[in-house]
Every structure is written in C-alpha cells, then in structure tokens.
Image 1 (spheres, rainbow, N blue to C red):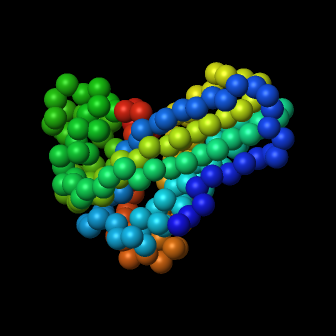
Image 2 (tube, helix red, strand yellow):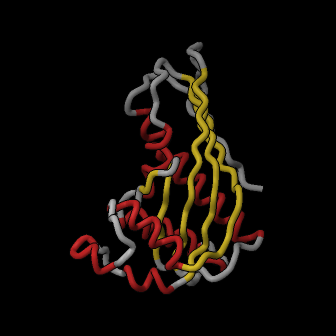
Image 3 (cartoon, rainbow, N blue to C red):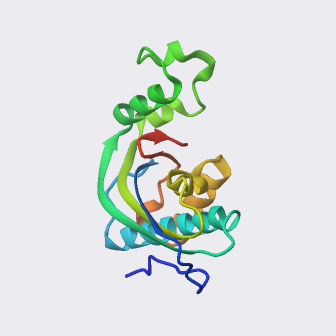
Length: 185
C-alpha cells in the first residue's frame, strides 16, 4: 500500500491543528473501464504525490514552521458516457442557459465534440489535510486544485499515470476536475 502522508519539517509547533476534508471528482477522458487494483494504486500514489507537493508549496510560502499531513481517499469510480457528464460540467463552467453546444459560440473549448462522444472514468475522492502552523486560515481547496489547473499540469499528471505502465491509463487523453463542487480544469 502506498505511503499517503508526509511530515515536514520535524519541528511541530504548539499552534492548534487545522483539519480539512476536501471532496473532489476527476474525469479521465478516454478511459473505457474502471481501474483494477494496480491502476487504483497508481492513481492514488500519483494523485497523493501531486497534492502533497502543492500543499507543501502553499504552506511553506507563508508559514515559518509547520507540520502537515495529507491523505487521499479513493471513494468511488464509474465509467460514464461523455456527453452526459461533460455537457453538465461544461454548461456549469460557462454559465450557459441551454445545453446546445452551438449556443456557446466562441466559448466552446477545443475538443468539445470529441469529449462528448468518448467515455470517461469518473473518480470521486476525498483529501484530508491537517496543518499545524501559526496560521488558521488556509484554503485547502486551493491546495488540492493547485497541481491540476493548467493544461501543462494536466498533461504532466496524465503522463505520470501513463509512465507507471498501468494499462488503465493508456487511452486517457485529457481530464476535467472539480474540487468541492467547483470546476477547476
């Protein structure tokens, strides 16, 4: 089982502990089947590594001494038809009033029709972040989302899944993600 926590640095301040639960959903576009146990382990480790690193980056920019712990829990997965879920997410993102792609005009992202026609693997997960520091006003959603916001970050993440040699990710072309109900990609 992957090690899903990190303690940095070893000094633990006396400040109160801040504990956050962040629910997220990721769509891996092009995936045609649910993850097997190896694929799930790869997904957990790669996702944990990215969220842990981004959490560290956010905290260390601000806090002089801190201790933190990150855990990623795999809640559920399902292969979904692209048109149903992607259309709903796209409409939410662009505040469209109709489900017609044509009505979205120039706001329609490249690849819209391809995503509508392909299946996607939907993964729901929960991230637990615990922080001891002199601050108590952290934005845990930002910590979870930070490593997935740009197209380059998403491509790097998908590449890291594919490099792990799990057949589960061979057909993944792109991704979409929500953090606490807000679309970030």
